[in-house]
Length: 87
Image 1 (cartoon, rainbow, N blue to C red):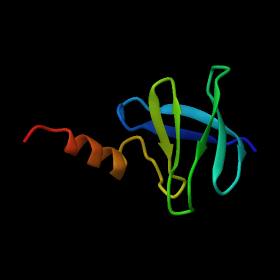
Image 2 (cartoon, rainbow, N blue to C red; image 1 turned 180 degrees about the vertical axis):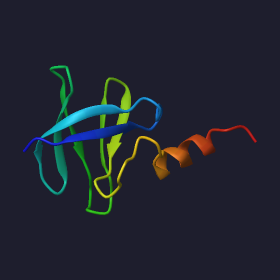
Image 3 (tube, rainbow, N blue to C red; image 1 turned 90 degrees about the horizontal axis):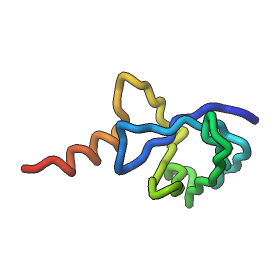
Image 4 (tube, helix red, strand yellow; image 1 turned 120 degrees about the horizontal axis):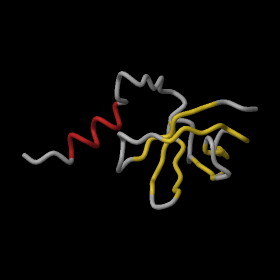
């Protein structure tokens, strides 16, 4: 199985990470970062949760239920950036 996905970094939502899925199950993804030799794992505790994992100080997530369109930021990224704005 080889499918390209976009991983979102909670702290840098404007810097997504492109990866290919190497292995997967309902609770586990093993991905390869495009154009590198880097591979890492993302996990989730149930089918309603996004896959989450850490790499190099970044905290990345992927939700297969969302259709991530580059022109429209995903809901979780918008919530994160709105929460960090000064009032």
